[in-house]
Image (cartoon, rainbow, N blue to C red; front, side, top):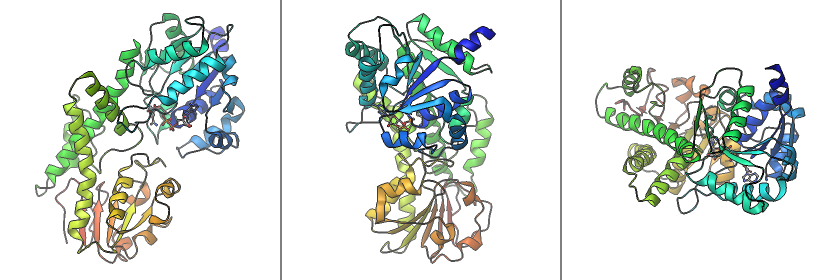
Length: 446
Ligand code: NAD
């Protein structure tokens, strides 16, 4: 056993894509004494990593990165991957303009691996960790073979999806709830399983399957989570029409049923982020391409889109005219403990508000820099919560950061017009002066 551990620890691991998935994986492996070659085409990102500066905010990442730097060689040069035993692909797989998954990044990486990495004497296992629609692993295998020009000799491809949550990326990478491994080359699968068994001393369920099923498991997982959120949001909307009904109590009660489970039943402004919206959309387009009507998935998407319109309509309905009114937004990132604003509902709401020429001022503990890249001087920003609330006509709490949970009526004293829309029910048990509306509760009071 000791012998295997020593051998595995000497493995060189390549990771292509230094984003939330790739960088979190790199620092966790480095902490376990693996030598990691981390490749990203974004030279600014690589420069930051080399300078010990995390390119995005993620709890614990900063301290993990500084402790790991000596074990991570970061670069934009694919040739450095030549000596790696296993190469993980963790590049982004966004939605293209046509609503279908855009596979250009993974295809590009496949070509680079074929041209610059594979050598006759190296037999790396290529592991596709990016979220991709069924058939992509086989497609990338062909791309690599064609670029390498030595079909089928010396490398294998394994599909191995990632399930980490932003805001808990390090924690989840250290302790994944499952390892899904898909492929048809038993030896390559075994190599990846052995590698993980060496990384994780604790027992993690390993699920072995084929490429296509592995690819689809990730979509099934995220679509189901999105469905749970849309379901509870629809319940929340029903509750709003029933005096005293509480969506939180409903979520608690049904969550105790083991067939349902308590997670992802938090009603709110709708789901956002870089995964659920894009993965649901990719599955919808894929399903339509197959000729299967994704009616449930589309309803989930529609229910989610409705939440932001509902918040916007509340603003419109309760302000006496919109002209030049000041709207204060607390929370920009799609979830707390993250600076990620991709598909954030806050960003969608701000777009609607500035379209109506409202004056918007925003606060977020981590995501202001990213938001500035979208809105520039079209909105106002502040790091001071009270400054954002002061003189406001309407305050909207979007992201449940801890600092917002501490607010009370004193903080709202300086509002011009006390309309408070609490999409996370942070103040549901507090006495709030003015018009207070909490998503999922029949609580509009003056
Ligand atoms: P990200 O956007 O944070 O990072 C992707 C990185 O890949 C970027 O730094 C980009 O510069 C790099 N890249 C893109 N094309 C490249 C190329 N041709 N060569 C080298 N580098 C390239 O993405 P992420 O959030 O880490 O997600 C990566 C994949 O993992 C996606 O498929 C995503 O769906 C999936 N995933 C993400 C999460 C999450 O919570 N973020 C969770 C599970 C799975």
